[in-house]
Amino acid sequence: MTIAVRAAGVNPADVKRREGAFGTSGALPQAMGPEAAGVVTALGEGVTRFALGDAVLGGPARGRGAFAGHTVLRASDAALLPEGVPFEVAATLPVAGTTSFDLVHHLDLAPGASVLVLGAGGGVGHLVLQIAAARGLSAVGVASASKRTLIEGTGARFVPSGASAPAAARALLPTGADLLIDLVGGEPLRALAPLAASPDSLVSAADEAAASALGGSGRRRRDDALAGIVALVASGQVTPQIVDTYPLARATEAIARVEAGHLGGKIVILP
Ligand SMILES: NC(=O)c1ccc[n+]([C@@H]2O[C@H](COP(=O)([O-])OP(=O)(O)OC[C@H]3O[C@@H](n4cnc5c(N)ncnc54)[C@H](OP(=O)(O)O)[C@@H]3O)[C@@H](O)[C@H]2O)c1
Image 1 (cartoon, protein in one colour):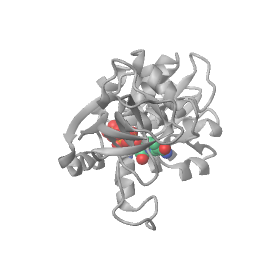
Image 2 (cartoon, rainbow, N blue to C red):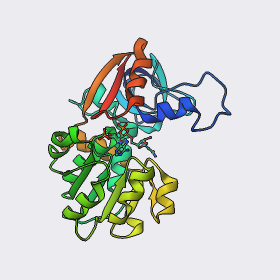
Image 3 (cartoon, helix red, strand yellow):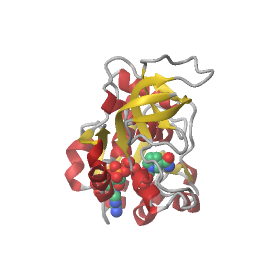
Image 4 (tube, protein in one colour):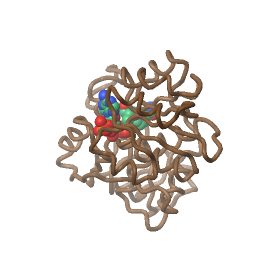
């Protein structure tokens, strides 16, 4: 179905796509923007779950992008926007939201279990902490010092990132973390990995190769992730943090903000 885009989330994936990290064989120019929210303007054959004029969110179909006036969503990858959820909030859910949901549910943890999050103050990490809180999990977030208030505002305990992070996390989690969620990868992940209660309790959205080498794995996609995160946002249990918005004409600046990193939430483009 075609939508008139009302808001589009910006992700590190946009930077990676531009750098060729997802392959360089496709024809150029390539559409960018993996997260969209908007209003249905045309329906494909056989689409019955949605109607013209519905407010929806989802990830654009292969070859399409959300940084546009209109885009195309696969109906099977879309959801209705619940009343009261603004378009710019909805536009943070198809990628960052579903990733967070998948990661927190990587293991079937009981309330009270511990979750250690590396990169806890970013677009995905901040949602991870809120979902963990909604599930009654005990979260510890590793982030730069300036993000202490942001992390603690979710109910999580805070550990400053850097060389002291593994020891500081160990002091809070003497028997290790039931689930270690990584959003950074590389050396910071390798340094923190011994905190995972067992190797398979490590999952990474940022560095699947490193996670696998350590006995863990990459993100496992769940069919219920989009509906799950939409329900958590609609009920007010999860509130995506929007750091800034940009008009479509300034999309390059929006992407540059994400590329510079260290944001405390999401950047959204409003066409
Ligand atoms: N596999 C998937 O489907 C999928 C989906 C979504 C995202 N991802 C990936 O997941 C990662 C996180 O995405 P995001 O949207 O949350 O990105 P983001 O908003 O840029 O957040 C990344 C966080 O990493 C932290 N960080 C950067 N360098 C660090 C270091 N050396 N030590 C400790 N922390 C460091 C930053 O925290 P501070 O500011 O506190 O330093 C930042 O908050 C990205 O690699 C992204 O591509 C994968």
